[in-house]
Length: 421
Image 1 (tube, rainbow, N blue to C red):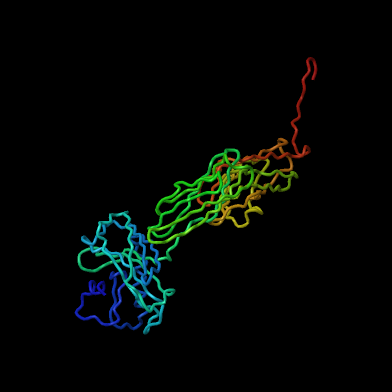
Image 2 (image 1 turned 30 degrees about the horizontal axis):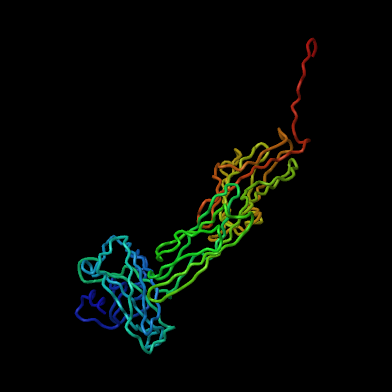
C-alpha cells in the first residue's frame, strides 16, 4: 500500500488499486476490460531490462517462513536506504480461494539495504515472517523482490523479483563423462555448479585415486571443478564418485553425489577408404572413435579436384540427431569444410561414430594410381569440443584412395639409342 500512495498523485483513488513494479505504473478505478488494461501495464514492464539478479530459497522453521536471499546489483546505481530508499522484500502468499481471488498474502517481511550496494555488488540476507497460523504450508510460496526510488519524487521502482525455491542443495551436472586422449595423456578438469541458500558451506570427498576436487570445500559461492588424473587411469572405462556434503549453522544438512565415468583411449577422426569404380560416384565415410564426451566436431577435407569432384555431404549413421554445416565455397579447388554438432547437452557415445558420408564424382581415367583425402584446417579448423565448449585433443588421420590399374593413364616414353632411333 505504501508503494501505491508513493506514486499516486490524485485527490481521490477508487478501487481497484493496481501498481506494477512497485509503482512504475499504476491503475485505479473500474475499467471497461480489466484484463486488457492490466495487460497493457504488464507488457511494457516485461521489455525493460532488470536492475538486479536475485536468487532466493525458503523453508518452514517452526511456524515461520525463513527466506534466504542473494541480490546482485546489475544496475548503474548504488543502492541504499539513505540515498534512494532501497529495500529487500519477501512476499509470502498462499494458494487459497479467498473472496474473489485464488491467493492470499500471509506475510511480507522486509529490510532496508543499509550498507551501500555498489553496481556489481552482492548482498545476502535472511528474512523471516511472523508466526503463521491457520495456513496450508504445502500451498505457501514466496517471492523476493528489491525496489528503490530511482529519481526525484516519491515513486518506487522494482529492480527485479524472483520466486524462492525450496531450500536445498543441488549440483549440476550430477553425472559426467570425461574422455582422456591416450595420445596426450593430459589431465582434464570440468567445472560443476553448486546451488543452495547462501548460508550453506560444503565439503567434497572422492572414492577414486584418479579423481580430485578443487577447492575441497567452501561456501556455496565457491564453485569447484572435478579433475581426472590421466596417470591414474587404466585403459578403457572406469567410474568414480564425488560426495558433496553441505550444512548450515541454522540446522540444514544435505548430501549430493556426482558420478564420473572416465575413458582412457585414442580419440581419432579418420576418413575411411572404399573401392573405386572409375566413372562412378564414391562414398567415403568420416568416422570418429569417440570417448563419450564429444559434442561438436569440425574439420576440413583436402582432395585432388582432378580425381574427386562435386562433393556432397550427408550426416552419417552415428550423427542422425546432429546439425550439419558444410562450407563448399572452395570445393572446386579441393577444399571442403564440415561441422557436425549435436543438440545442446548431448555427446556422442563411446565407440566408433560415423559422422558424415562424403560422396564424390570420379572420372573414368586418372593421371595417377592414388589420391589422398586429407583432414586439414582450411576452410574450417580441425577441432572437437565437449558440451561445455571446451576443446578436446584428438588425432586426425588421412586416407589414401587406390584406383584400378586400368583407369590410370600411362605416358608413352621413347628410348633413344646412339646411332639409331
